[in-house]
Length: 343
Image (cartoon, rainbow, N blue to C red; front, side):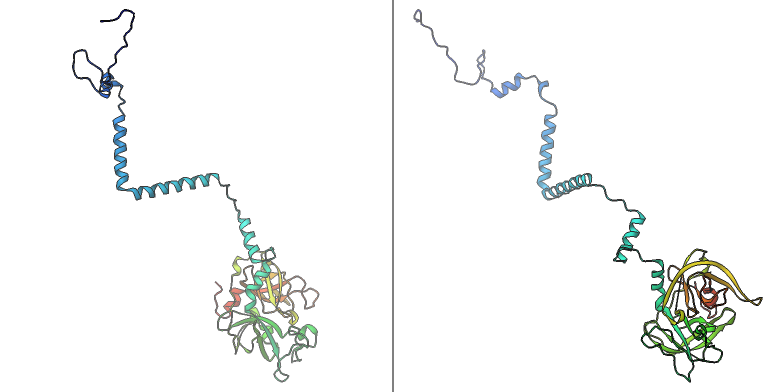
């Protein structure tokens, strides 16, 4: 029985399960929540995501090493791509830049070597000095104090006691094959009774004339001793020459040398006449300095290839000194004298 004026506390069930009015068993909270939610409220992609996650876990469990390696490679590619994107652009090199770098490497001074110096370096191992002498007086000897001074040749028949005439028997030759065959001028080879050649390395040898082309003033001489390091010249072709092309004449002007003089081709197919008679034809005209002693020496192009054999100079004054005009027989004609092909 309730007492008047006293309120009773409400009684709450200790069970978390909700009671049903019909006395049926209570429904679990989670089940009740699911039952209370309409079916359309469950995200349809949720089961798919869970399936993909389970499949990935199973796959990773079977191939952990491969997946790790693939991840590392992918990371490296990403880093490389970022580096390529962020690095500064490379320098664009022109052909002039490349040539300048090569020339600087060749020449420590930072200056490119001249065409003449390169041509000289290529031909000089093949150049020989040709001396004529009289056996009765003995071989010619250098003047005291210098191994490269002009040689005082004894007087022989047909050689006048003029300064230039006394050096007619001092000339130049060029080795054209590995047998030691030497091309020179005929007027050099037959100016004295005996010949002696001096190779680039200092080897000396007697030589004899083995062939001649008087129409080209060419002689073929053969030494009796060859150096161990014999270097034949490279024969070029005169067909590619044009007026203005650079050429170098190498020889022993007045017995001094070896000396190099540079110039250009002045003309082609020149003809020399004497007293109205053609003495030489098909000559290369050039303006590189040539003097007595240069006769028989090589005329080379910018690559150091022999394109001609120095044969004559022209001086309207009558003096046998250079006046700006010199001539060379083409290497085709010269090599033809010994059945050598220049190409």
